Length: 247
Image (tube, rainbow, N blue to C red):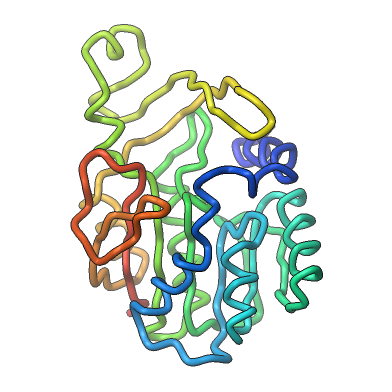
């Protein structure tokens, strides 16, 4: 399988249970916080990259926005479409790879939340090239000065857990900042052993990549689900939030 196909297979299988994860339970507050960051008028067009089962897309549509949700997982899109129909709102759903998509539209704003595509790599893949491709695609689909909010893995939190023994075991390379390890995920369908390959990006690196892709980064905040606020990024929290505008 290609690198993206591995993650596609995982999310296709997990789609029906995805919304049972605890981190998905803060959608209304998350959307409210996003809308508080920049003036985005009702009726504006918003692109949701890595939309998953559509929880942010659907909530934005409820609030009067024109939303396009994009995801690599057909299973996720299928669930999202069902949820939108049940909510009585319209969202344009697109099945596509975030690193390589073209839409015949420019958007007023964009989001990529809860590691929605960013960081989803396999062993041997160039993580920086992968993530920058996503950022450039988003920038290419945004109007000038259009807001973009990203939440991505906070590399500081994982690095602080690493020890010399992990280096000797091949689980972490401090030269490349790549971690290879098995982790037990407590998923709604039960404990699942996942083989993880991560390039641990810290905030200055992500800011650099965003700038190279055409963004101005206005702020970096703590981005852990359920704890979004205009506050400093904590070293031990799961995700960081990057608040940007397209140049």
